[in-house]
Image 1 (tube, rainbow, N blue to C red):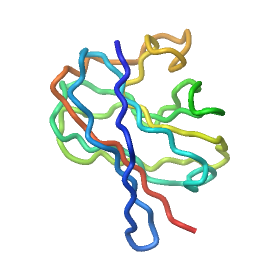
Image 2 (cartoon, rainbow, N blue to C red):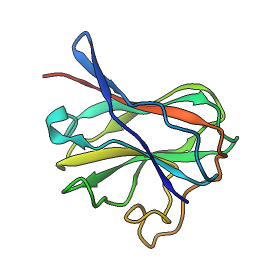
Image 3 (cartoon, one colour):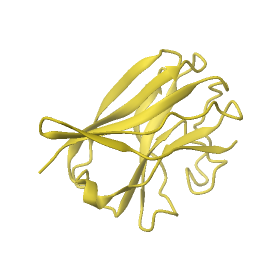
Image 4 (cartoon, one colour):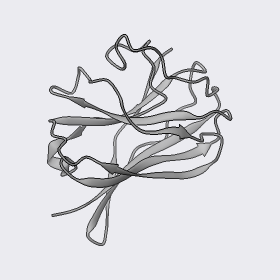
Length: 150
């Protein structure tokens, strides 16, 4: 299994909100690969907040439920175990899959979103066993998150 990064978030202002959307991923090299978003720094005002986040499936993956979550880091390199936002994402359905994410009481210099986490990728799930699913190799997506600007 490998790690694919949905790089570079593009920010846009929608009223009082900042909407941040990643680049579209390439098709996966392996059926059980993990997709992570670029690191989000604390300056983006999502810690100790309730935000919306999710993924926009551009090309459908396999018909299987997947985990979508987030990870925390003190340095942007070493990551915590994945914290689930959803355990039954439907990557075989194209379009937007949006979730309410309660980060109240969560503080960290870095956070990133993760799709189909796998323990075969260092620092994702530790020894807790694999959560990743065989989502196929044809799918692509964008990750996104939105929060109210101060």
